[in-house]
Image (cartoon, rainbow, N blue to C red; front, side, top):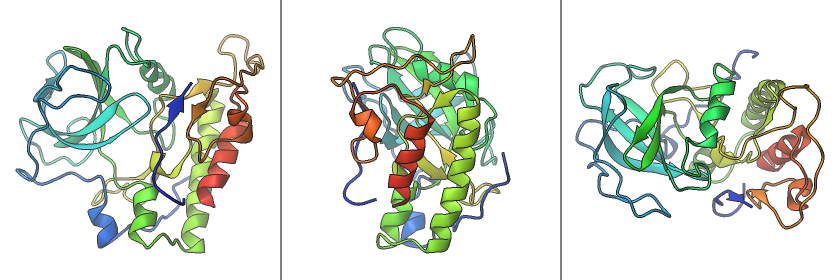
Amino acid sequence: MKGEPEAAQEAAPGPAQLAVPTGAAANAAVKAPTNGENKPAGGKEEEGSTAPLPDRVCISGLPEYYVEKKLGKGGFGQVYVGRRVNGTKQKDGPQANYVALKFEHRSSKGCNYGPPYEWSVYNSLGGVHGIPKVHYKGRQSDYYIMVMDMLGPSLWDVWNSQGQVMSQEMVSCIAVEALSILKELHAKGYVHGDVKPENFLLGQLGTANEKRLYLCDLGLATRWKDAVCGTHVEYDQRPDVFRGTVRYASVHAHLGRTASRRDDLESLAYTLL
């Protein structure tokens, strides 16, 4: 996990007991803020677009949320804290007071003026162990928006907060849990395509899931198994096309070859190293 985080590029067993960060690590977590801690982010623009983000999000009459601080960005969209206008005491689930709002502009590569490709992946992977839950999704103005569970710090955050050192025991727990998530993802016919420390998150602090591991950002996920006939997709190689994050990408990804399960496993190995 050396160096600075890199952005992605395009061209069911029980959870392992991961250590919950404290002190500086807890401060680095993507956690729900207290009321009034953050100013609304309305008026800010999504990177690569000219349309301002809304001050509030309300999709088809579903719960309304204030748009607050920015949490980060994925391959195609950006994620902000959403605070429910009519506050609740729930910490997770569809009635949670704080959620993660993922914005993707309708003209982004992932949308192509239609619903984001990532939506179809989440639809296919609903209920899969270690995949964040999407509670609502829809379009508001120029943005497609997903309302998701708020999660905790990424493995990148935890590693940096601990002086860029992790115990052998914690790395072992991460490896076991990550392999469990990838096994179920692959069983559904998908490869993630961008396995790296920034895309593995712990559960939200203070909840029953704070020691669980989650794999997020499915914008680069692709099928390794044909949805109709169930066979491996046709092999191809395009050296001029790269998908993923350079530091953690497999050798085959760098060569522009069709993504397969082995590529996720190779990227996981680089992540653990």
